[in-house]
Length: 155
Image (cartoon, rainbow, N blue to C red; front, top):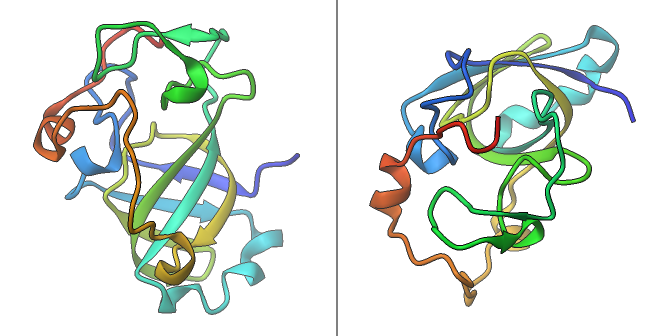
């Protein structure tokens, strides 16, 4: 697997970052796709939201159980959004603002500056929205998630 670009955001430190895009609704970022992959951005500007799939490049360890940010109980890593997963892969849905050349401007980004980009996919409501879903152990409200900031537990 190879990176296709770099994600740039205002977040230069893993501490005190939003823990999900819901907590970063006004945060702007820039995705710079390597020139050799820029042609793949054609027609992307017609979508309102995109998935960014990226590498948690600052994750230095793997844990199969973690205490997530919105909980006090140890959970299996696959039941969380923790970066300490075996393959250190992250995913965020962000608002697409514009595409200019090999640069994608986005809003609602919760990613560390300099993060390697693995892929971009369009959010398509007919494919991606689930009318009925369960949130498992997660009981926090949208407002609580928006206010929550990261600490050192996953550094």
